[in-house]
Image (cartoon, rainbow, N blue to C red; front, side, top):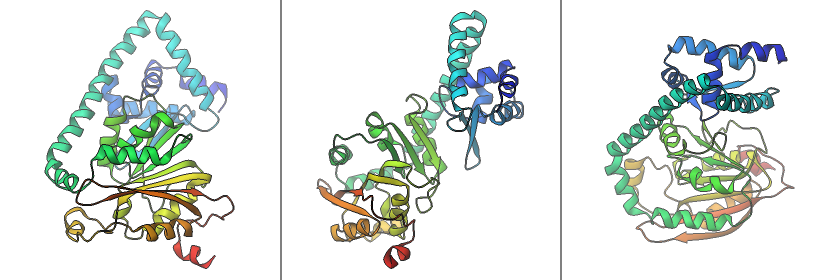
Length: 330
């Protein structure tokens, strides 16, 4: 986009306020309307102008549309410069500062509403979650084991597949360049957003998608994590194959899941498609998709053992996508 298009897009106070707000956090269009005190159709028109100029990006999540500062394309640097300019203007222009302060007060109410919605969800589902947690090793022990297994080397760009409430994204964020949390459920992504909204803008991105068809280009991530999600996969090979496709050569995968067990009732009560995984089964699957398995660790402390498996992406193995048949035929 040319400079004239950019300057026309910025020639409105509402659009300046939107740019200031989305520099703080990603917001749904309805949330923006609430923060600005304007109708959603009117805000949508302003959003369209900013997106057409390349200064902002839309992202659909179920029936919701979220807006964020541009992170790709030719206007990414311009968007960052605009945000710096608006921060300076807020310091120097008392009138603009008062408007921004009021917008941020409304933004705080949005944060509170997200947290209340998350608390209400947990309250509704507390009984079933407590029953499942009672079967497993303590969550803090599992998290320590995951961090230990990944070691002290930089995590780079991290993909947290099946991010759920966002806890693992939150855990790994300090050691990562950035974290992308993916989940199929809009409800789970709303919970994750409430948990992660205090982090600096751009540190964590939440994306709706399916682990069997990841919406990312090949070689996009340095670290890929599955935390207590692979047992939901009817065909785990497809999910691991997709993880291999998006993992860079030399990158790592970490899979946290149940060790093989015989609790058939979990298929019915918690929709588990797989009753855990054995070490040989996991090693064979990782090897098939071009990973070199490392050591695994078992975390005891519950009726069902939890395992942490890690592996490194081999550079000489050709990318095979998500098809186990193609892997076998190679």
